[in-house]
Length: 107
Length: 118
Image (tube, rainbow over all chains, first blue to last red; front, side, top):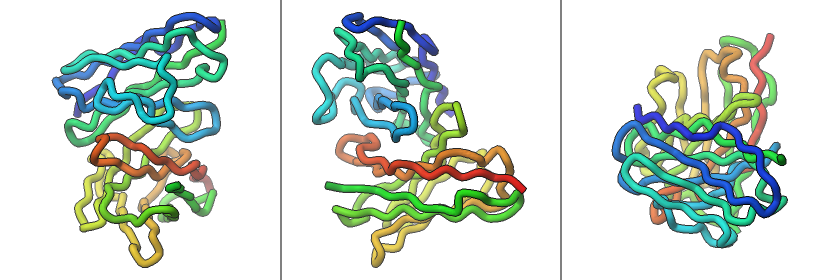
């Protein structure tokens, strides 16, 4: 199975900060990577598909990049509604797998 | 607007069978792939598998054939059955639509909590 490892596991930040989350795959997944945001008690919400394509309705302060085995999610100018847990997920090779999540917390 | 709504028993006894339903509104089930994803309390997301309305399915090997997904196109519903449950199956279960154009899960249900306990 392809393992997806996110770093850091948690990050403390303030409104206005720039936050970067990394997701590494144990083998090449091309650009078959998605990013999701999940708030407590809610379902995940798609942010990015194909590593860097912003889902409709997602603010442009979010950006995604990477290919192969290393990917990043960046939040520029963190807003109060961005405090949440973020997951990466690969759909290149069965079984599709999620990263363990990165919690963005209030500093 | 496409919406998914999971429903289930809430509480299941160990060794019994868990049955969940996901009702889809706003779009037909075909021709999408559908998945169930679960999340144990306080933990991350675990992909269970996918089902394609044409009958193709894949499940995570660790479930060891305990899981079965199906669709009922007449009711626009998908289902998950999980046999021989244990406490490790306690989780919030989400159904999600895999959008083949995006190659990602673009629509999720709100989730249903299932507790396995005697």
